[in-house]
Image 1 (tube, rainbow, N blue to C red):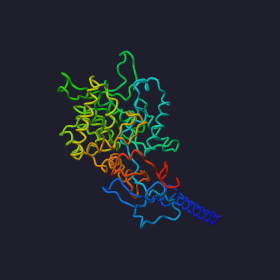
Image 2 (image 1 turned 135 degrees about the vertical axis):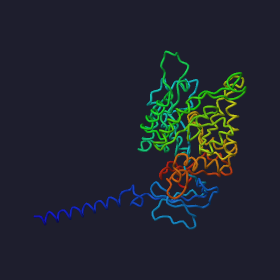
Image 3 (image 1 turned 180 degrees about the vertical axis):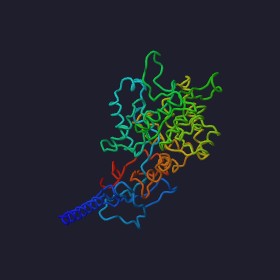
Image 4 (image 1 turned 90 degrees about the horizontal axis):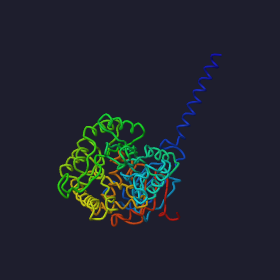
Amino acid sequence: MKRWIALLTILCSSLCSSLSGRAQVIDRSVPGALNVRQVAIRAGVLIDGESNSPRRNQVITIRGNRITDVSDAASARIPDGAEVIDLSQATVLPGLIDAHTHIFLQGEDPAEGGYDIQLLKYPLAFRAARATVSVRRALEQGFTTLRDVETEGAGYGDVGIKMAIEGGYIPGPRLFVATRAISTTGGYPLEGYAPEIEVPKGVQIIDGPVEARKAAREQLDHGADWIKVYMTHRSWVSNNGVGKNGELVSQPTLTVEELRAIVDETHGWGKKVACHAYGGEGLQRGLDGGCDSIEHGLVLTDAQIAQMIRQGTWLCATLSVYYSDWAPADTPEGQRDRKRASNHEVSFRKALKAGVKIAFGTDMGGIPWSEPMAQEFPRMVEFGMTPMQAIQSATSRAAELLGMKGRLGVIAPGAYADVVAVAGDPMEDIKVLGDVGFVMKDGKVFKNELSPGK
């Protein structure tokens, strides 16, 4: 009897080992597994996101959701049975990255209630439905990754949209989300209502380092990939007021101590802090408090630029959003709008020349999602970037900001298979990036208007 038990034990052990080995062989999540889809893309011109010069006649091989090889067409080995996508008449690039968006904003029309109406009358389900349209539009335009920097009163809705994309329920880019964002009392809309009425705010309001740290913990616990902080609020052109006459002034919000509590907590979780800052004292507090990126940076002094370089702080400038919807020139608001734009150009040019790390961002949502995201590229080139620098800001540089260097924003072995293509040459005309004809995300083709027969 003992012999039979011993024999049965050996047989069971052998069978379990065999089944376990077989499971490992056919597990499609394991690189090199059987039946994994293989693709070869023939690229007429390749801009890989990192090199400073394009390459011609390249073949990109893909297995599953990863790039396995990039080589000259003459020497490339296309795997047996691989699907071949012919983009030999196109310029191929990594999937684009927009590092500053708001999928829950729609460039709110003042005639329809402006910013306030969405918090006061729009159900969260309605706002989430609109956000699904936003992310699809981004993907259609070749933006395969977004850093979405707060939901503007929609709570943790961005976490839900991210889950829906990752679960395959809706199409959209990879999302890095910042959830609610943080500001102080008197530092964010809704505003202007009777003081005895409690109205919702577009961000989480804190006062003091203890509340600041707790807010960061709450947001991180509920799925924030980044923490977004508002270091300045409203801005105006000084006229016998705070600052010199004719100077753009921005109201500071968090103290350095409040920001340091947020940064310390967030860095402890292995994540980063993005600081909305127009300029002045608020921006300086952002730098002194250790923020990882300055969003907008309309007014940057030479000393602040030097500090950004010293600390490794990124700039996500979002230029184009400040060139639309100007108020009449003879109004205080119109003077402010024009001063924002003129100061912004000067600051961007100085930061670029000094070598500040710059990532591409549009502030879509502040701009209606019906407008082209790629409008930011020609603005960056107009203000001093080469076309290649502008492209890299939306590929390898933005990936580095996101902590995804080598995995996003490049066409290289080991990177995720996020690939886009255009019919023209962006080195000659950066505006062709506004007409992306091929989009692949995670090895799956979402759009193909360029490959013959498609």
